[in-house]
Image (cartoon, rainbow, N blue to C red; front, side, top):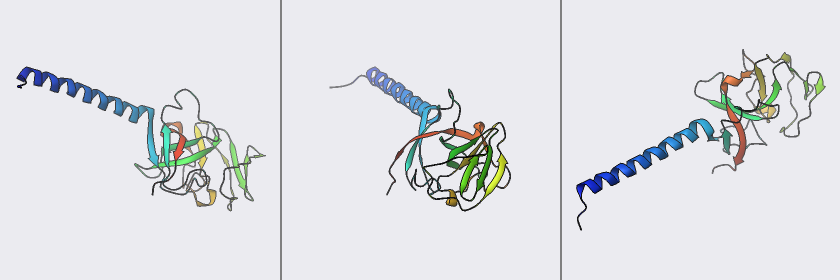
Length: 172
């Protein structure tokens, strides 16, 4: 049984259109909807373990503001092409103080059930700029976050990639 040249060309065109459409859909999802990230460090222990895979919703802040307590993925302000995962602690206008292992936001103690251990170092007081967010890892004593950055001790909405919404157990 011979297949005509025109039928073969028609079939190749049909398959090519389908493959291109799937590629476009996949790229749209990857760049605008969500992506998966592998967490390389222990700065978010116990909430997120080393090598856990997290689902990052990129569109989550298109329709709602970043909130205190959100776990965000953002572009590192210090290292190009590196992403970090931290928890939002302070919002624009908040005054942050860490004293004797306790976190104070605007003069009130802020209790956190998710942190790994009590903080050893004091910090602040620090006034978060109106367009900023103060972020820290849940493993406060082993997290390179806003408290330790040399200059700008906050991030802006512009560097936030998305909200971490789900985690899968670590890779072996």
